[in-house]
Length: 372
Image 1 (cartoon, rainbow, N blue to C red):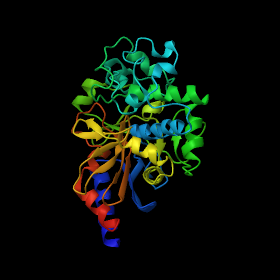
Image 2: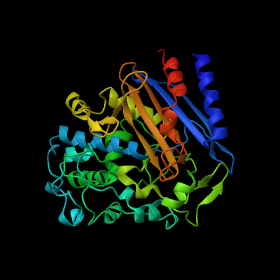
Image 3: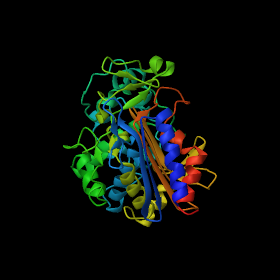
């Protein structure tokens, strides 16, 4: 194993010198973490080295955590997947949101509700990730929904796949309505504490931060400048990136606001895969695949083809961070990657964690390390 771990370590070290401030990776097999590595700098200017216990934003992988809670609530017979959202949420929350009253919980989880995404609205992009961003602003959970009120639907419910962050803001509100508790408390009680995820938080809503938190950087190119613009608080760094640490992840909330380490993210993925968080029926429901562009989508899990057979998981990309977490059905190998650079609104070719995962050398070495 040493030769393969040395090769992957050198590859990641090279990437942090060339394209990323910091990268952390964790590799799992069966039900355990078998190897992890941290490369680069968590904070470039202060020369703070990355370490395995440094936390990063995981972006939309947050959606998988939210789906787990929703499915746990169905197991407890508090809700049903085919309940309409309007059965639970008040008119004031749903007002002006096309499809929100008719969409079901299942459709929201699978991105088949046809509700517009606040992340696609130019005004939201500039306010939350760009030139109109207010440094350290705390966003209330429903604030992003105001950007899609009175927008047309993307399709009829259950008609087509449309990835939408709005679906998960609504699901977060649903969890709070059904349980009577704050979302961060449900995450803590149902997932973080049982799995001993001590560095994992819903950023901006938890009373404490992880002891080590990576600074946030973002790709800055012509696409980003055109789509988002540069806030006064953003600071230029080398390699055409911006320090965007003045931004708050509270804007992402249930759609992308969790921070974690590569090792703790791996612990969550392995627990999910191995049935430690959900019963067999829920896992079957989660993996009923429907068309999702070039991939397939279950209930907040993607399934895509790879050289090692189907891979199941999710990627994440927000202002300042990107991440991915996948397991391979046929080889029982799992890979989690977190970085402190994001690429949203910077074009499809901007480098991020999901592009690292698609790098055949990283996946090949991960399988060699896992013994396949």
